[in-house]
Image 1 (spheres, helix red, strand yellow):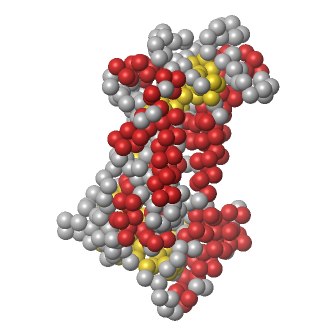
Image 2 (cartoon, one colour; image 1 turned 60 degrees about the vertical axis):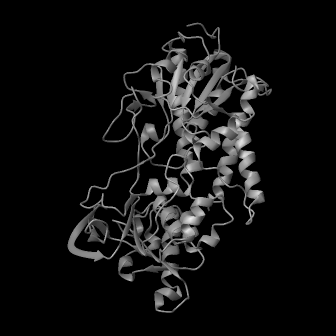
Image 3 (cartoon, helix red, strand yellow; image 1 turned 120 degrees about the horizontal axis):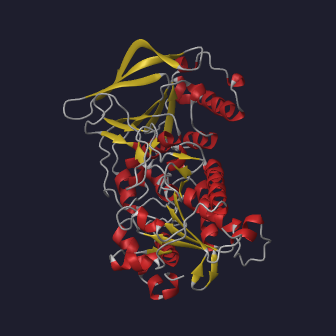
Amino acid sequence: MTDTLTSPLRVAIVGAGPAGIYAGNILANAIAGREDGSPLDAAGARYGAVEIDLFESLPAPYGLIRYGVAPDHPRIKGIVNSLHEMLDAQGVDADRRTIRFLGNIEVGRDVSIDELQARYHAVILATGAIRDAALDIPGIDLPGSHGAADFVSWFDGHPDVPRTWALDDEQVAVIGNGNVALDVARILAKLPENLRSTEVPDNVLAGLEASAVTDVHVFGRRGPADIKFTPIELRELGEVAGVDILLDDADFEGVDPAAAPNNQLKIMLRTLNSWRDRPENNGEATGATRRLHLHFWHAPVEITGAGRVESIRFERTAPNPDGSVRGTGEFVEYPITGVYRAVGYFGSPIVDVPFDERRGVVPNEGGRVDGVAGLYATGWIKRGPVGLIGHTKSDATETIGNLLADLDAGLLAAPTETDDVIALLTERGVEVTTWDGWLELDAHERALGAAHRHTRERVKVVPREEQVEISRSSALSNTGATAR
């Protein structure tokens, strides 16, 4: 291979959440063709220009940041703003973008991986993990038992889930000790009036206002010193107005915050200990209409009920010297009629791509997909659903580094098809949304929020067809929005 490509390096990224956007931004910044006056690095000097198409199955970008995080998290706005700037800054001129957002496209259905590989030097999979991990206990499939991911998709206004969610149960359980479990518990327990200023969709707000929930029980298999929350998530839980937080002193026997292995855990243990001193944990009435119970050392054993959930049975656990936990033989049962499992996310297979069914990832080495030249992975579909935004960036850096190394070694095949993928999609009747279309939808949602009786930053448009209609109302009238 020559030192410089005679045509732009063309890369398709499947997934426009943080993993895909970070990968595109890192790649764009590593390649020459930037016209912002910044100096080129060695990679840029070798490779010349790059054209990146960012494919997304939803009409709008941002993935789990838009559809997987509770709407009452103000800190998420900063992440959205950062991702927006990455995409918005990649314009080259009025009809050409270094990174081009192409939404409302299901790869594997509307266009195949083979068709992408024929049009790009490389394809990067950044599809994340959106399914609930399994919890293999009897009764898990009874009516009234739900996956947390489904509930999160509902309260975040995901266009492909039902608009209604029955919240008819007074006593509900959330199984898990991670941030998703806290999000689910907080939304279930929070008084609806304290969500009106957020971007929660109107149909969700109506559902929460009709909720019968009075008590939310969060169960963890391990003890307080093994929680997987982050300090800010835990602190937010303690600030929920009108909700008592109840803990069992017995769960904290032998737990010493000073012995915690890191500062984050020390802070969280101190927070939990401070809640034990609250009036509600000392038998005093507070007037709260809802209660949030945090239970530790509980391993779920069985969900029981005649036709639907009526109770859930746990075995009490205890720590082993090596840090694992064991069952104690003591069983307890709670009269719970609604269960939400939040034991982790799990990746979904992509048509015609290798997939590890046990781990829920695309098998890879450093982001190189096993056995398929020119195919790469980044984010949760690469390493599994663990880690925070910082891990996603380092993931993308590794994958892009290996992609560029393969390009340098002459291992990437040149595209065999020269037509723009949009021509193929248009021929198939796919209603593609673009970055300009997202700006239209974004402005529309903000206008709805400003006009709302509670004055909100935005009100999400939920139906897919409505999102597509708004996004395509003017963006596609400008041919430059869809042509290189």
